[in-house]
Length: 440
Ligand code: GDP
Ligand code: MG
Image (cartoon, rainbow, N blue to C red; front, side, top):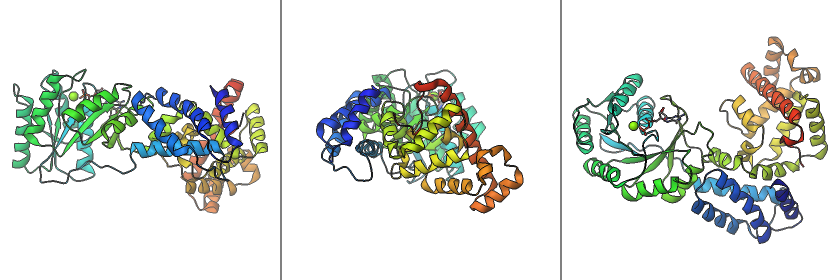
C-alpha cells in the first residue's frame, strides 16, 4: 500500500495543479484510513466526495509539495466536518433546567452524568441534582447515588416502583422546591435500539422538556455509530453528543460518523473511568487521530520531505548507531517548524505521539517550538552532546539564558530521553520501523 502511495505522490509532485486522477488515487488511500478508523461507510463516501471536489484543480502552492497540499485539504475538511465551533453544555434557562442523558447500555451514561454534574458544580458553580431513571438494571439507581456521594453532588432520593417519567417529574419538582439550577436525568439503556427504549425516553422528554438531550456513545462503536445516532436523533431529538472511552485505542471514527449524520456537536469526551476524566472536544486532535493510523501517515511522512536530505541522512545514521543527542532534537524541532501551517498534522508523525505524552497535554504550537529551541540554543555544545552533564546549576543557567524555567528545561530533557529511547528501539527494528522525517 505504501509503495503505491509513494508512486502516486511522486506523480503529484511533477505537476502544477492537482489533477483529478491524482487526487482520486490519493483519496483511495484516505478512504482506507477512514474505514480503518471505523468511520461509517456512507460518511466516508460523502467525505471523499467533498474533499475531491475541493482538491481538484487547486494550484499547488510553491512552498509546499502537492502531497502536503492534499493532506492539508483532507485534514481541514475533517476538522470542518467534526465541527470547529466550541459547544459547551447549555444551562441557560429558567432553573431548574433539565439535562437528559440517553444512549445504549454500557455506553457510559451514568459515569458521564456524574462527570458533567461535577464539572457544572465546580467550574460553573451550579447547584446540581442528579436522578437515575434506570429502573431496569438492578442497583443502577444506587450506582448514581454512590457516585454522587463521591463527587459531592446531591441525588434524588430513591423510591422503588416508580416509572422513569414519574421519577423525572419528581426530580424536576424537587429541583424547583430546593432551588437547584440543573437537574441531570440519567436514563436506562439497552443493548440495542428498540421501540420500548425509545418510548421510555420519549415519555421522559415529554414530561420535562430537557434543555439538553445528550447522546452518550462509546467511541469504540464502529459502523453501528451511524445507526445509533440516527435513531436517537430521529426519535428523541438530541442536542449534542458525549463520546466516551476516548482513552482507549479506538480511532475516534465514531465522532465523524455521529457528527455527519446528526449535524449535532460533539460536546464532551470521556477519557477515563474517574469523575474528572472529562474533556472538551478538540476537532483537530480527533482529526489527527482518525488519520493517524492509516496510510495517511505515509502521506504526511512524504510531506516531511521538505527537510533537507542531508539532515535526514545524518539523522538516519544517528539512529542506526542508536545515538540521538540534543543537537538532533533541535534539528527535528526546526524541521517541524518548517512544516508550519500544518501544525495540527504533526500529531500524525510517528514519534510525535510519544512527544505529546512527554509534554503531558501541552499544545504543539510554534511558540512552544521556539521556546524549546531557545533552551537548546542556551546549552553549550558539550551539554548538547551529553545531556547527562546537566545538573541543577547548569539547568538554572539555561533556563535564565533562554527565558524559560527549570521545569520547562526538565520537560524538554524528558522528552528528549523518551525520543532517544524510541529511536533506539526503531533502529533495532531496522528498516521495517517507520523513521520520523526520513524519506523513503
Ligand atoms: P451506562 O450503562 O451507560 O450507564 O454506563 P456506565 O456509566 O455504567 O459505564 C459503563 C462502564 O464504562 C463503567 O465501567 C465505566 O467506568 C466505564 N466508562 C464510562 N466512561 C468511560 C470512559 O470515558 N473511559 C473509560 N475507560 N471507561 C469509561
Ligand atoms: Mg447507567
